[in-house]
Length: 590
Image 1 (cartoon, rainbow, N blue to C red):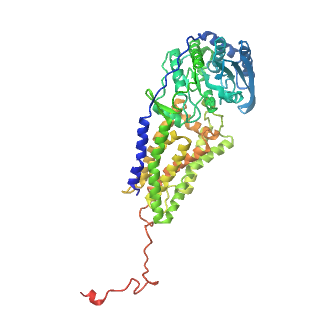
Image 2 (cartoon, helix red, strand yellow):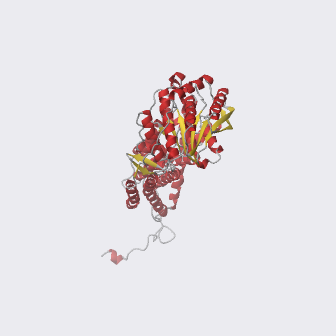
Image 3 (cartoon, rainbow, N blue to C red):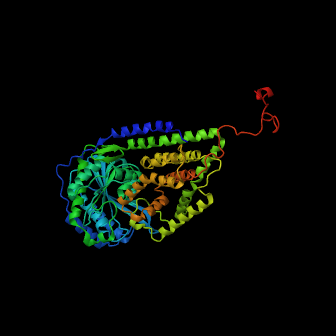
């Protein structure tokens, strides 16, 4: 059995980490003060421009003639702004298997400072007319350029009409082409500003890594958006915030900008997920919504422009609880402390068994063999991607353009077959006949705990959700003996519940629905979920399989402390006298 004294002592750091977390709350930064006056954004004119864009180019797939025609229109409008500097950037890409030439159109409005604010809007539409999406975003960008061109500026303003909306290629290419990307202190992306029925969240700060957007920038943008849209834009609660840190994936051009190291948020009138085709028709364009979205952008740009410092107050990473922020480093510390107790107890139990009998080292290889079950599925995912049977869209991509279709059921059937064949070959519930259940459980605990520790190095917030999995092995090493394997299997599934709940929240935030597992496969195939993280997940799952298997081992078979007893006595033979001399006869008869 494991030593409960070591386990209890190792839990003390977790209590200390929890106390530190409770005393580390920080107030949410106050929004930046608004400018003295803000021009009125003309939503009616912007709606008229959006409709004219759809009429000029109803089909604006990336690199198409319609896409180039709208690029020429944007360049012409930018060139008419006095004092502006217009440039273009071309780059090669692909769309639906065809090579295409894409173009960004950039307007620079010099200010009295090199500090810069970047505003981007996608111009193309890979599906449908995109009237309320990219057409309205382009119209809002043009209206914003007209208003800002006539305003007094402290900072340099860069406005860009980008190409390659699926995957935000234009935004990523734009950052690489900027002469001094480090001068850009904040960036804003315009998303779906023309929908008929606006709905929160209006400010989107998701990225591609386990980091949070600037708390001060988010507070400023939310206050302005709530006033302009006349709807409250609530901040996400602690569970949503933790889920988005643990599963760091988002949609929109702000993701590409944040990945490039620029503090960026998106202003959207319809949340994070792009609207369906029914809401993209030209007749659905709303001048009222465009006025609210454009007014939000205009006031936010002017607020940032007049601030004497970047909007970066608050912790780097955080979750929000009420009106307070919990710094991310305290969550990371808590996750590490929760892993210490089961890892130390597992190491102590396994080393004691190894000192008693060197054959205990084989239990490590036995536990590691269980990794082959999930690893077989992972290899199938990579093989399907190499064979071209799985899409490998550049992240961030539009989920609507990469649905499962017929490939989804086929892919999951192949994954199930790979798992079944591997299970038949290695028989994961088989245990060595000469190993005690507690030794097997300790080896499984080491595998699970070290895998979660590896995940902590990649993403400490995901490791916090997976921390319960590192404690499951203790049930199989208790003094009264392990529970039945079905009971331990249920306990293993329950230990995954926080991570599964976090993933469900993430999928709901992006409105992925039942297609969420399919998009996990695509992110693995594309490399958004890296090979190292995928292998560590295999270690966690393999360790839990080993824990369940350890519960079925026979106790007290061969492994014993000390040397084995022998039938041979002091001499080298078995026979009379081999058991030692007999007592004298007189002593026997007393």
